Every structure is written in C-alpha cells, then in structure tokens.
Length: 421
Ligand code: GTR
Image 1 (tube, rainbow, N blue to C red):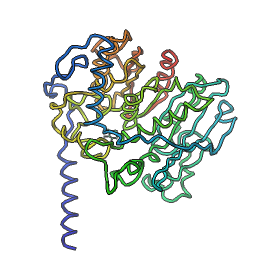
Image 2 (image 1 turned 120 degrees about the horizontal axis):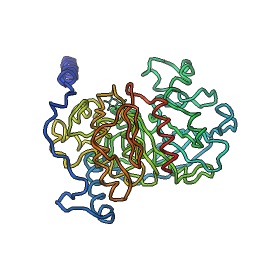
Image 3 (image 1 turned 90 degrees about the horizontal axis):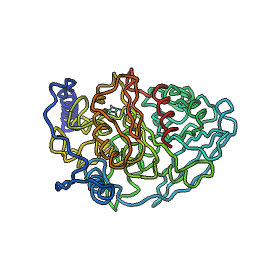
C-alpha cells in the first residue's frame, strides 16, 4: 500500500515537473542556429539533380529515415477487409448528395476491428473526386443529418467529452459542422468521406487496443522501438479507405485528396508520403511532427510532444527529445516525399504553438524538390500576408484566427483542388 502511494506521488511529481518545466519559445531571436538538411543532397553528400536520382536514391533514404525514426514501420502487410454498406440514402444534405455509410471489418486471430466511413457524394457527378479526412468527435458531429450512425467506439468514449452515457450521445449530433463545409464541397462537384479516428486507434497511450495488436508477435505487448505509433496507424486507416475507393464505382480513386487537421494533419502528411495513390494532400495546422520545422523549436517541440503524447510517434523518435540538432532530416523533407503531387500547407495566425512560420518555411524548402519535377512551389521565403494564399502545386496560406478548420480554409482547398486535379 505504502509502495503504491509512493509510486502515485512519483507519477504526479513527474507529470507536473515535465509540464511545468516546458517553456515554449516564441521569439525568432531566441531560435538556435541550425543547419537545415538539403533535400537534394544525399546522406553521404551526393548532389541530386535529376528526377530519377530523387526517385531511386534520395526519396527512399529519406522515407526510410522517417519510417524507422519518426512515425514507425508497420510490421507486416495487413490490408484485407470486408466492406458492408450499413446504410444509404439518395437525398441527403438538402437534396444535394448521395449518402453511403460503409463499415470496413478487419479480422485476425479472433480479433475484429471495424470502422465506419461516412461518404457524401454529389448527385450530379458520375465518379466523384473526393476529400478524405478523419473527424475527432464522431461521424455524427460533422453534419446535421439524423441518419448518420453514431459509432459504438464514440459512444464508449463519450465520457471524455463530459457527455456521459449513450442517451446523451445524440445531443452531440452536428456539434462540429463548423469544421466541415459539406455543402461547399458538394457544390464544387467533390465528395467527402470521413471516419472517426478513434475507431482505427483510440487516441490514448494504450497499445492493447486499436489496430496495433493485430500485428504483434506472440507475447508482444507494444510495438517495437522502430514500429508504428498512433499517427502511422491512422495513416494506415486512410490507406484502407483508399482501397475501398478503388473498388467503388461511384468514386474517382485517382482524385482523392487526403486531408487532416492538427494531429490528423500530421497523419495526412504521413499518409501522403506512405501511399502514393493519394493524388493530393492537405495539412491544416499540423505543427510539430507535421509540417513545422523541428529544428526551429518554436512553440511545441519534439521533446514536449513525445512527453505528452508518447504513443503518437515511434519510440526511436524520443532520441531527438531536446536534441533536434541531431536530426539528419527535418519536416520539409517529409513534405518533399509528397512531391510532385499537389500539397497544401495551411497555418493560422493565432496558432503559434504550431509555429506558422516554421510551417511556411518547411513548404518553402520543400519547393526545390517540386522544382526538380518542373512543378511550382513557394517562390519566396517571405511569408505571405494573412488571408492571401499562394496556390501553386505546393500551396500555402496563413489565415486570421485560431487553431481550427474554417470556411475560409475549405474555400481555399476546394478552389485549389479543382485547379490541381
Ligand atoms: C495538441 C498538440 C498538437 C496538435 C493538437 C491537436 O495538444 O500539442 O501537436 O496535434 O493537440 O491535434 O489538436
């Protein structure tokens, strides 16, 4: 008993000390000097000047580094699932859309994982291009639509949001419509597919649930040091959605734009890097471990993110806690892994925690790889004015306001995606 008490005190002390010790830096003048690795120079110093060299040599070595040391490897292929249409309607969203709710089921060694994708498709398009993005609070929160199935996983987690018990769950219908410009998307001829991310892997430091245990060896309790954290697991889920699109007669799988906000923006970037079937990628306010350069150490840092979310990245990434200078890569090279496909990085003025300037510079420094493919990136290292997007194959904007997804963001993404695809 005494021992337990002692451990509890230690735990509280540790948590408080690591929380209170961290002082984010927001001042440019206090950024340490650092060398940004050149995306077009290999780890052993060879210059890359042709597309073929990038594809054969540089991209694979960068990819391997991020896989082994940042997001973690998926230990084996695990792609087989059965898909079941749980519900469909042809008169959704003020008569503009077809609605499909599809459950993907994965089975192995007596375990089952299921997640439900909510899909809206514009009625007047035969095979629609589509935005794919996870939601944070359940499919039923993204639109005012009584037909959206409330996922079991969400209902189980509802306590976390102060809404305990299933009977109050329906009160949360539509509470996140502000982040999903569904009608604008449909009016532009695009579809939208969304999944509650907690169904693929619950967002907590627990590797006994979600998709990870399906690939454990006998007796294994958690992924190895170079194996996948939650971000890689969520990215895996995006790829399975893509597998489904490839089979669908209603969706144009060559025009899928993978999208994500914040931790799910980090996820969208990793999904774009790992799965080249995604035609375009959008990172909304993805910050540290997403679009922002780590070596600037502005706002959230590698040490801080690994401390608070020790399960998002692979264990190997912790070697760079308060040691960003030792990283042989930076996040502009994650962005470069998406080249030459269209990529949109977006920031918000008041989201300093995510380091908007670091997100911008990352896009700027990825641009030389786009240039290799004769695609236009960000032409200048001067940040644009707020609400003045630069929309090339590689696009960037910083808008007014806080860490969020707004109609302004969606208007830009839609306009750009129409041009690019
Ligand atoms: C914060 C985290 C960020 C970002 C954000 C979110 O707590 O520090 O990196 O991912 O959560 O996902 O909303």
